[in-house]
Image: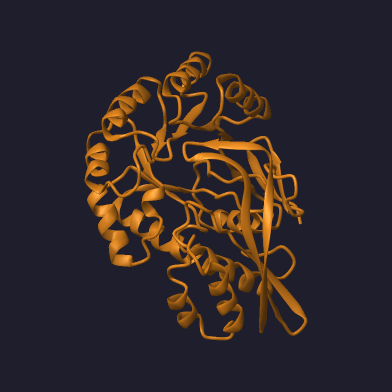
Length: 334
């Protein structure tokens, strides 16, 4: 087997606002493996400023993988344990080499017999921009919407209040993602206000790494809390277990590109199941290559709540997609 990679810069159709700043481009890397005339493709979904493997020498490590692609899986996994996006791309490429075409995890989903329900994502911005996005998602048929918050809470709260006035929680599920945008004291107040608004959950209310504060918030919160960035960079199984046992969140958010690909995601899911913690899977601005693989994997996990997968529509220069969105249902059209 041989391997090669190439960088690719995705261009946003319009800037994406988060509490960490505004995104105009998204860098990623496409990994290809070849054997006996067949080719497999995967995406190493590096996320600058967020991935734990956003470090000097990233491309050198990718080249190391290409140079040593025929080493056994256990050796490769050990070498790449601190490069979760590279390991994830390797998993994808090898699976695609085996299955062919656009396939990674053949199932009723890839056979066109079933679909995945996803939430609609609302990016941060001025109130009128956020309102415009919300109206668009509602017209498309979404009944679960996730809003990025944590920049201007007063305006964001007003938008949520207006939404809730129009749509009761039985009709519209509202999730919010703060990306660590609040401090501890702010978060306590926000959690109470979110309860009054009938919000399903909030992702990462405070910055990752404040374990004791997060534990206290999860213990006392009136609104379910989901850990997101808190999981990034934890590769040891026992440390994963300790983290979940100590914080005991209501949910965890799983981004395969950031937490060790499918193998890493499986570990978090198994731990969450044993501890009674809910979860859902979210993409992390991958191109259509990685998104396709993650969607196929997500379907195999049989989680019935809306998942946080993208649709590939954010970028002007994305790759052709095997995924199709109808309402809030993501399906596979090979």
